Amino acid sequence: MTTTNSRAERAAQARAAVVQLAAGGIDGVVFGWVDNAGLTRVKSVPLPQLEHAAEHGVGAVPCFDLALVDDSFTTTASSAGPMGDLRLVPDLDRLTPLAAQPGWAWAPADRYTQDGTPHPGCQRGFARRATEAVERRGLSVLAGIEIEWVVADAAGAPATSGPGYGMTRFVERSDYLREVLRALTAQGLTVLQLHPEYAAGQFEVSVAADGPVGAADTTMLVRHTVRAVSARHGLRVSFAPVFTEGAIGNGGHLHLSLWRQGRNLAHGGPGRHGLHPEAEHFLSGVLAELPALLALGAPGVASYLRLVPSHFAGAYRCWGLENREAALRLITGSGAGQANAEVKCFDAAANPYLAVGGVLAAGLAGLDAGMPLPPETRSDPAALASAERLPASLPEASDAFEKSAPRRRCRSARGSPGRR
Ligand code: GLU
Ligand code: MG
Image (cartoon, rainbow, N blue to C red; front, side, top):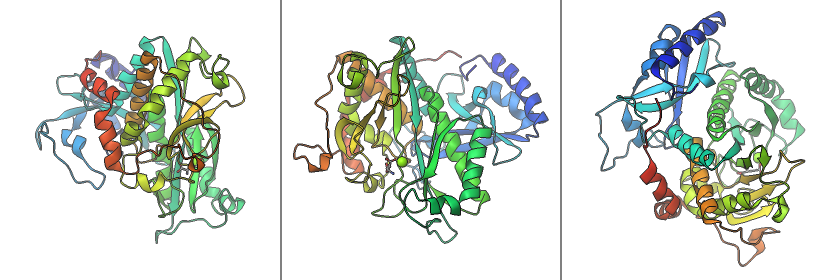
């Protein structure tokens, strides 16, 4: 079931969930969604209200569509200011007791208008529509977002010592990392890797891939969990694109693979490194739109402090097998199921639903146009005179976004009625 089920179905699902949650000592459920600035916003209900909330949603002010990263609000010609209301409807398929916040459960939420139609500005709805467009072509996508963060002490200094990837950091924060691992696992996530990253105080976790909407939900849950565990250990946490100016930043690399009838189209095909034609066209569409996609995947002013050469951030518009300076890194992995492409230029300021939905839209445009991939970049692009830098500032990325043809197509298709 999803929030697109009927009100009666959702109410029945909630009634069953309440019995289980009560037996597990849960007192309340927090509904999370991510705004256009990439911030997670929440509302919560006590357990006895869950059925009503699942059936009717809870009120959510639409002006959060205009919220900025500093909690101020912008305006647009169509904004209604203080007027109106939306309904935040929890997706109980992802209802999860929170291991690091005893007594609380979490569910990602979709936003609907008061008459029950999908809110056109719902970011999760956008990712779902993009996924459905992929599925209409008989294809599916597996996605996963790597999550990097920095922990700091009360004074704001990075809370590890020793070298990048160093054992010293692992020993210093052993109990903390164990609790992160345990909490994520207890919440039903499959952790693939957890390690100290390169920058001071930086760690990274990756979890198993999922469908595009599920992967974005998981990103929200992982970040929520890291935050909660960090708080329990007296640590401050930052997912900002850059924590220390000049240092390596926090990426939000998006991995994805395209599948048809159970076959990974990045493996065993006649193209370069085993790509099947559909995967090549899809990736060429993503590569073509990367300057525009940065407005979604690297949406902060500080994103461009991170997106610089020699930081493994993918500052160049090119692709290459295992090329960590290419914005689009191809990974063949250790078998058919492992091959995937990594969009490296995205960071942790992104709204994961917008980032993944935008990439799908760009990929589908490439697929429909039958676009080929340009020649591969087989070395560090920084040393190549022909290398093309991606936008070096947010205004440049926003300009590219304004001009993007796939963006215009999404805009004219948005708000198409969903089943409720
Ligand atoms: N932290 C780097 C970034 O800003 C990525 C390092 C890596 O390749 O995982 O994207
Ligand atoms: Mg990393």
